[in-house]
Length: 118
View 1 (cartoon, rainbow, N blue to C red):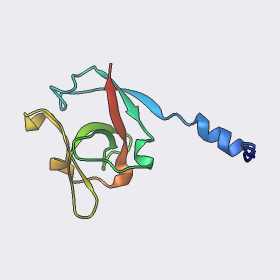
View 2 (view 1 turned 180 degrees about the vertical axis):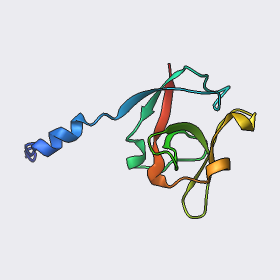
View 3 (view 1 turned 60 degrees about the horizontal axis):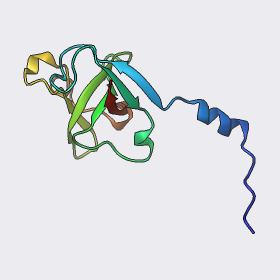
């Protein structure tokens, strides 16, 4: 005989209301040619709760010195201490504010993975 399901608590229900997906608009040319200024992208904010970001992933990250500022960059390296080096795809290095100027980011500063472009 199968075990009956437990009744969901209010806390369980409230967890379901937390939005996993966010839409963000690309500002600037740092991710050109992959993403153009004005593109809208879909961010999975829960993907890294169960797995680690990988080199090659395009992510939404928190700027290390301006916490209200969010960045869309590609992970290009993981340091020995588990921090993430982010860079823009634009070959013109002046077009991107990234880890070349502010250093690698802590895992807590990686907010989600870009999964789709509209």
